[in-house]
Length: 105
Length: 431
Image (tube, chains in turn cyan, blue):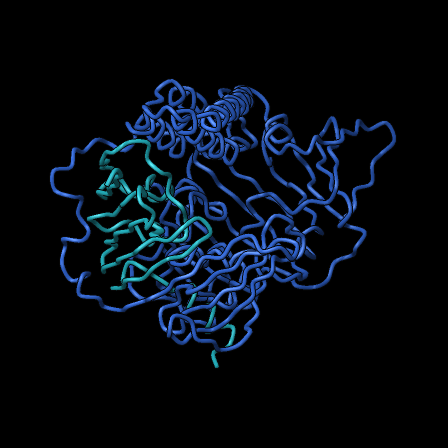
């Protein structure tokens, strides 16, 4: 079994922007269908009826996009917004990301 | 949280519980307990994917109560849908608008939160750097003409991650230990404030940007020398040998029960608290693990075995990382203690901050040296416990005025946001 140094290295090197993965994420307030492709592309779709869908079409500065594990705000109206990464840290550092979200399916 | 698990490497004691299977994948169960003295963090139990390092499941507990569970289910690696771009683009026919505009036009208080966020960001940067403001009049004992020149030179961008033994060394710096060192710091406020003002203006708050930019002038590089001794997170003493700031801070000490900050005209005191100076980040270096690291070149620095790293923002970094607001940075890690012998932080190509440790000793100190003996007649002030208020109260001159004004702005905005949220919550509940 891996020792603590190996686990620390494993956690430190975790980098979702290199993954190709689909999964369902469950947390206290709902479920999200998640799709990730290398380069920081992701799509997360809330499984409740009017939940938002959001994603990004370009790489963010590191895995700060946090595609899962946080509950995005529910939009108040049907719209699509284009901007930077949805995570606060990348929002301040990255100017090339096109992220989007919409609701009102 | 699941995909950026680096937060568990800073401020927690990790324990391996054993191998498990989660989502059909091999994983390692771990428990992360907040380090001693940290009353704000929660205990975390998690399943770490044995191949990818991401968390497949994360449980957070506070005082034994389960707060939250987040987990992956139905994990598929290399799914066909991830092969093309279709799944990652917005739906056809979408009408785009800028995300910041959404925040500014939202009726649910997002505008206020946006302003609060920016004000808090500016305030955070101000507080981080305000003690080093030379001010409008040249402070001849504190200001210098330029930053030092790096020798060895900083590392260029490199691929690859440092080896596990170095990462483990950084992690273990959070354990209590005896350590003494001389600390030297340089800060170039011209570089920092130019960037802060640029960021704030880009966010549409030109007035605040002007206020920030108005603060430094003349010699903008400050230098601080101090002798530091620590024996645990709340047992330390810092004696400033050369201007901590213009407030005249001379000693910052804590004996495990109370702390003292000694100024020429008063002593601030309160219950034991962790060392809050930026020098603490040179001693407790677990925060580095939240950044993206590369290089790890073996070197000898001032007679000590060391490794040199390039530090950039990573997914788990957050807005602030240790003493760093901006990246990249160049770090030299002592191979024996895990301390940072040198840390240089850059904005673009210009260094804005430089910290270094010298004369390192690992001999136990005298417990009595962590106490401050107060001479009769000294003015002693019990601090309020509000870190913003207490901290900004000690900043003199224009910089202090700016910081206190920003503190008050944040407080009032937070109050307004709280009131607006209460109103909206109340409104929704009556629909």
